Length: 359
Image 1 (cartoon, one colour):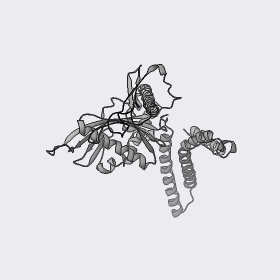
Image 2 (image 1 turned 120 degrees about the horizontal axis):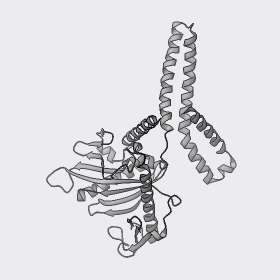
Image 3 (image 1 turned 90 degrees about the vertical axis):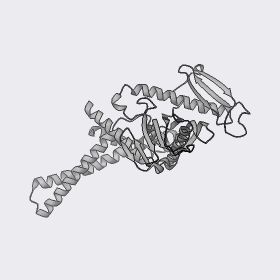
Image 4 (image 1 turned 45 degrees about the horizontal axis):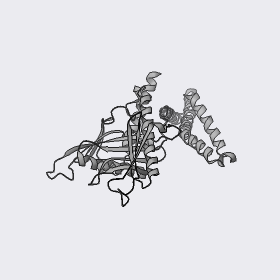
């Protein structure tokens, strides 16, 4: 591990030097690529420095204790330094093992999120709208931006389905754990007897695919144009601007009607299609690595329940890691950090365990 860390530290210094060169600073594309690598290596190098500083302090204290001849006060100070630096080394080593785990190549990508109301009719559609609000509020809290790609809205303001993109640093690395079935237990607005209903929605988080990553043969596409329907302003039902793209090899269908422009709707639909196809490809590859599939997107049936939102008790439970938080309102208002941090930590621990077992 330490040979690898030395190599990382050397590359980091090389990048630091390159980023100050005029020929790099004057080339935005090259500068952005090098800066991206620099930021990825920075936490590893910083933790390695912490480890080495602790190691120096540990060796100094060890030498003092071995040589002896210390009075009681100095020996106690040396022992304290020995114990503290050893603990710091162990802690830093554990962090470094996690930082050196193989990275998901999609972690730094932007994402496309698709939410669909499931069992529960109108109440499920309203829950889908609540999830959309939750994710967009979280995105805003992270300084990310989002854009609705397509939406099928109900009369009460819910969504039968909605697709939207989120652009931001490491968006996929944070949100990829959200794919799966989400269940809500509450008294619906349409319920007159005050009974608690259970409804569900499914969430799919897809890494956004670039054209260069996944080329689609135009011959594989059937593109239909139709008039928009539903809420959306005066242009609705007056112009044939809505687009339906069918990917013939898979039968996958994507519709987009949010824009007045036929070309913009086509671009958005192809963006969603490309990301869905990339997600299928990634999931097929990852199915071969079962030890790493416990939490990752596409680990099984997308309708598999991963989380329950219980309104009567103000409780949110993530069933994959057995975590229950009594902060339902703040979570639905976008305060997802505690949940996502716990999922990420668990995932890292599982990967570390698998790596150690293989070794």
